[in-house]
Amino acid sequence: MIEFKDVCYAYEGEPVLRYVNFSIPSGATVLLQGPNGCGKSTLLKMLNGLIFPHEGSYTFEEKQIDEKAMKNTQFAKWYHQKIGFVWQNPDVQLFCNNVEEEIAFGPKQMGLTDNEVKQRVDEAIELLSLEKLRYRAPYHLSGGEKKKVAIASILVMNPEVWTMDEPLSALDEKTQLWLLDFLKALKAAGKTLIISTHDKTLARDIADFRICMDEEHQACIEAV
Image (cartoon, rainbow, N blue to C red; front, top):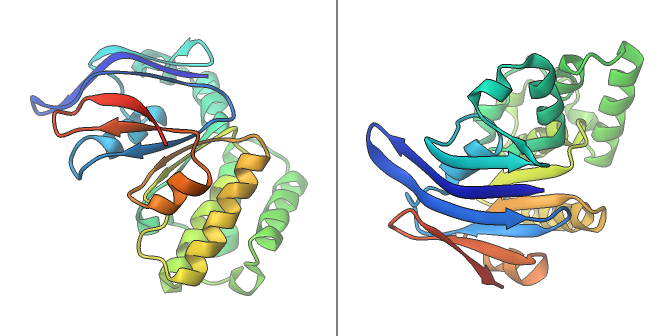
């Protein structure tokens, strides 16, 4: 489903990814691990079509993901329905006036009818137990509540691939346990999961393999 071939990327001339190679089959759960600053977040942004390789290639379902491809509105819409991104800090992701509008934003961009949007939003709110927060402003919520709303805004799109940047960080134990169960449910449903994390619980409970990055910004595949 996903393949990186000799991918390189640099910020202002400083290498962040050096000749990264890996492939991820559909339905796999992959952990992205390595020290801070090694390029994990950059790799996740590239997976989501927010930045593109300076060298090498990234293909998704045998289609090359680059700046030219993503300028095609129809292709970009197809791609963003396929893959979702839960950011480490939900404040980066949440921007609407209330939770209901936040969750509805993605389906509206897909061009769904009002009834279809409402159905998806209602289902996501029920599944994540967000009814009491429906009309609350996201910036008034707790960290765990914000994380749930961010997840709901991706869930409502029903992507085949979920990418997450340190999803368990800054969460209390109860919310961490809930999120772990949620990830297990996604895995059981056949979703592809790519998760940047330092948490050993995820490696033990759900991972199929891991992509380990080092301080030289290179990557290798390891068993868990």
